[in-house]
Amino acid sequence: MSRDKLIAMTRNLVEHGAADTMEYAEDVVRVPASAYTDPALFELEKKQIFRRLPLMVAPSCELPNVGDFKAMDICGVPLLLSRQKDGSMGAFLNMCTHRGNPLANGCGNASRFTCGYHGWTFKADGDLIGVADAQDFGKIDKSQHCLTQFPAYENAGLIWVTLDPHSKLSIPDYLCGYDELLKAFEFDGWTLFAQRTLEGPNWKTAYDGYLDFYHLPVLHKDTFGADFYNAFLARTQMPMVAGDWVAGLGLAPTFTNASCPPSVLEEIAAPDTEGLALVRSASDAMKLSARGYHRVLRVARTLADLDGEARVRRLHLAEALSYRSHLDRRRVAA
Image 1 (cartoon, helix red, strand yellow):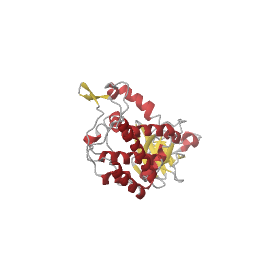
Image 2 (cartoon, rainbow, N blue to C red):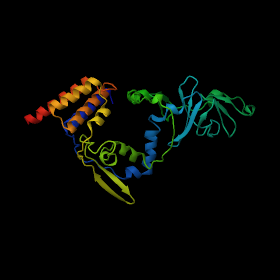
Image 3 (tube, rainbow, N blue to C red):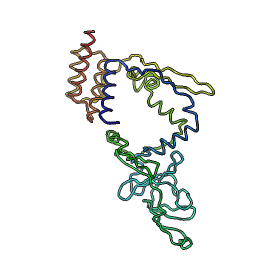
Image 4 (spheres, rainbow, N blue to C red):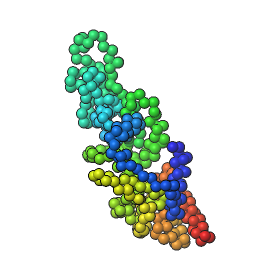
């Protein structure tokens, strides 16, 4: 998706949010329960999605030093990450090229990896440098027995890998600049404190939860607030699987209203001094409700994000207030 299209879609969502309107889909979408439970479909998903497209596999802070490594298994593919001498990230198939034995387990630091089965040794860059009893193998071209390497890309403090050694897909092109947007989180300056692994029941269940705004004012009412709305979301129906029955749930597009202290809204939006003075003054003049004030700050925050600004500036708030005033005039005229 191009940046222009992404911006156009975002502005469309912002307009619906500010106008308290929504854009309905033409029909209700029903997803069969088999999409979540069919093992054959899951194998196809692993092949066509997870083993073909770039995956974010680790934050850079997990491997900060030269020689740091991490071994993991992703969709049945044993992966070995290793920080190279030049600071780049190497990604390899964690299998000895002799008999396929794993070379490393867990995390650590090493300049070379030695197979625990027959003693073949590889440098951290994947080159084969040692063969036990090499004279018994005849002439060996070590360059033909290096570790299988996967395409890897590191940016914004995150590491992406494509689990297909023959992939021609450019990871930066695939990300379409999303990695640049992630720089705002400053992951490259983070330090790993603790780590745990959670075994999920189904990747699509987790993904659907990420896309589902409907649960936010209920499950996350103390963080998002009970007035967090999804007015721009289309009505959908998804299956809930329990035992041998399936119940379709219609996701209602309306939310309850509740107030949120202006100070909290201002802290989230992060306007600069001039912008804050403008929006407070305009709020009094326009007699904005708490909900209206919330919407103006939210629209301004989105505009600032689109401009790559960390703080909401006076210009962003002026545009948001102007749009709000335009909507008010339309309502009066109607």
